[in-house]
Image 1 (cartoon, one colour):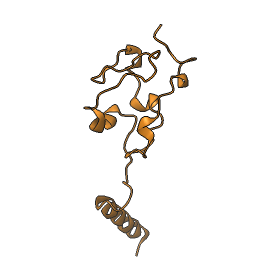
Image 2 (cartoon, rainbow, N blue to C red):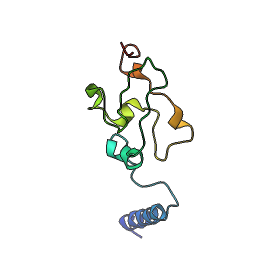
Image 3 (tube, helix red, strand yellow):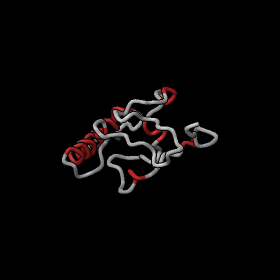
Image 4 (cartoon, rainbow, N blue to C red):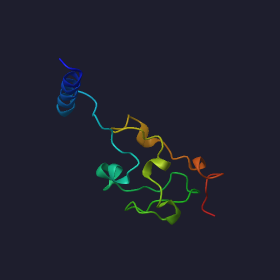
Length: 108
């Protein structure tokens, strides 16, 4: 069997396994594309921050109340999201504004 035929056979088997859901997908989801996130989260309400001193970044419909954030992807702030489906418990983790800001912004 030639090397090219062996490679084609291996790729065919990997594709079949992936299509049957028996393995990890051959291509990972693009988490930097907000549309990937919105496939599942578009209809979810965006709650105000638990801390009343923090500014609200999203309106309930998911749009931004602070236009400066519109150019960023979801995972720029929600950096704890690294895969789909998300591991248990990741939904309750808070965004760390200090990844970009010198201090946590407040409602001043």
